[in-house]
Length: 203
Image 1 (cartoon, one colour):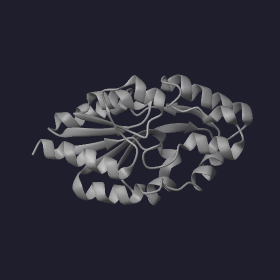
Image 2 (image 1 turned 30 degrees about the vertical axis):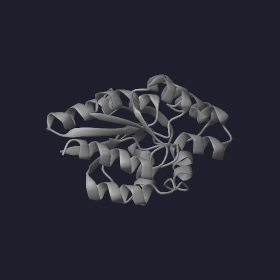
Image 3 (image 1 turned 180 degrees about the vertical axis):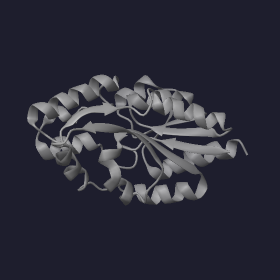
Image 4 (image 1 turned 45 degrees about the vertical axis):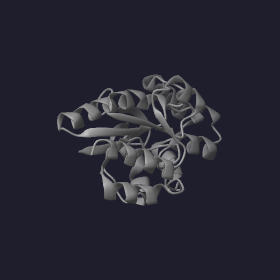
């Protein structure tokens, strides 16, 4: 039996931090895990910028509230959930994503949390588990699932490597060229075909 484990940003919704950068005019916040492979380095840089610019949690959630799912994402999710079980595994934070989860009709989400002080300042971040994407795959496999993993960035690679089938979805060229072992899809219809091909291969 197959289960799908997928990243969130860049797959079903736009990149949160890029949208925050565009709304605030802070170009340094455009960096994502597509650019920096070390997530800890990236998050410490982001928190330092937020502190320097005086941005609080509400400044970010106000931006997120204006965001919409990617074109075709909701229809693809409805199709996928009619075919297979789905878990979204993201390096986002529960304090950020409720508006987006509502627009995606509340798929199951595994993510992290933030530390926020009484004034609404983000003081730190709390990983649910180190290398949580890969470990989720291992957990699903321990339950005798075969896993199809979908991602687009450096922080998805350990998940894709551990999965029975790994698929890159609309990856930047630097990620695609570095990890040639994965199938690549640039649209939801193509992604459907890759998923069905994988499941059919084992039936």
